[in-house]
Length: 116
Image (cartoon, rainbow, N blue to C red; front, side, top):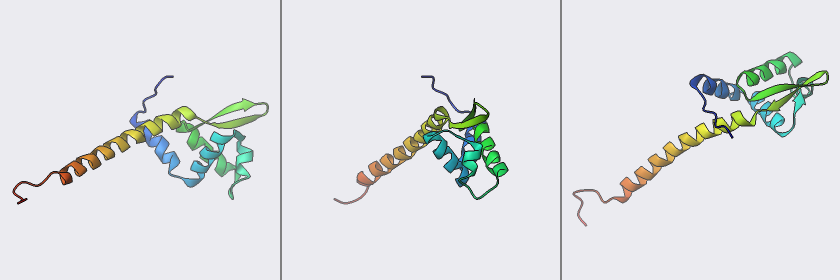
């Protein structure tokens, strides 16, 4: 498996796309099962064009792709991009956990100048 490192622009596009609850829901749906934009549009109280725009944002971010299937184009979640974003978040978690460990060590070390 090729490990894809995200550049800053890709990270910005991914997290900007995921900032919207409708787009997060679309990603969750198409990771479970591919669907056409028209099928996706039936699930939301917005126009077909609005859903199509949400899908376009997700596609530019690399979170979904569209594949031809007969007359339709099916939207599928892109697991590789999700994994790359997860690796980035894992790196941030590692930094955070390191800070917690250092803080715990600091609190566990008796202070200088204290009487026993």
